[in-house]
Image (cartoon, rainbow, N blue to C red; front, side, top):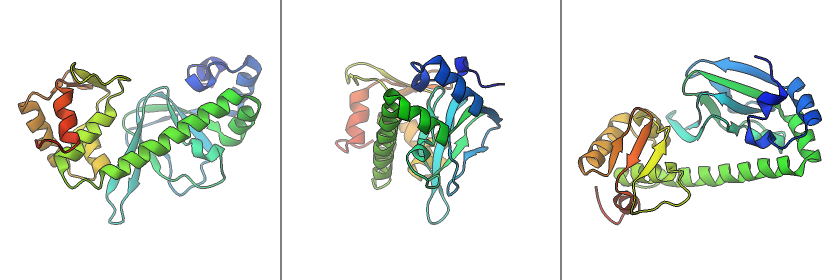
Amino acid sequence: MQVTPQLLKSFTLFRDLSEPELDKLALKSQVERFARRAIILTAGKKENRVCFLFEGRLQGVDFTIDGREVGIYFVNQGDYCGELCVFDQGVQPEHVIALNSTVVVFVPAEHLREVASRNPSIMAGLGNKLASRVRQMTIQRSLLGLPNIPQRVCNQLWLLIKSPNKNLAAALEIENSPTHMEIAIMLNVSRETVTRVFQQLQKKNIVARDGPNKLIIKTPEDLKKIAEGLTKL
């Protein structure tokens, strides 16, 4: 597949970019397909490219001192990662892996930086994304310090709810819900531990599955109380 201006415009960041700018950026970009568990961006390496996800799902991961994998964030279709290299010449701080068969568009950092210097909306979008990523990773790290595992899992679920208004009186949804293994990696616990917590949540009618990719939070107030340590599971 060739990178075209139309392909780049499918990403929100480039939606308002002029046709000449899109043409230049498309010529410098490339498309690659990766299999499940392939490494898209490598920690400790100067990648110097930003990864835009056209198809599939990615996860940013790091490793503890004893070698255990810890998930930091997810990247869904239409989103991007690796934007830090636009702002400095450092190495990629975390691995980014494919959670399923994935198609990504790589945009060289130097060319994206040039376009951003001429288009303030692009620079603002990159800056907002980076700030959001830092906040998200800070919160994710803080979850690892919670000694109560059900509280840790419920906090993770609460963070995954994308609804702008989290109405505690109505059911909420988590689209593209992570697997138990993916949640376990994010929280540095075993998959079996996460499964046991989910079994308790389902038994108390707090959560329910709606197909393989959607999780329904049936009683958000109860989930939030457990997340805040006000009640025990």
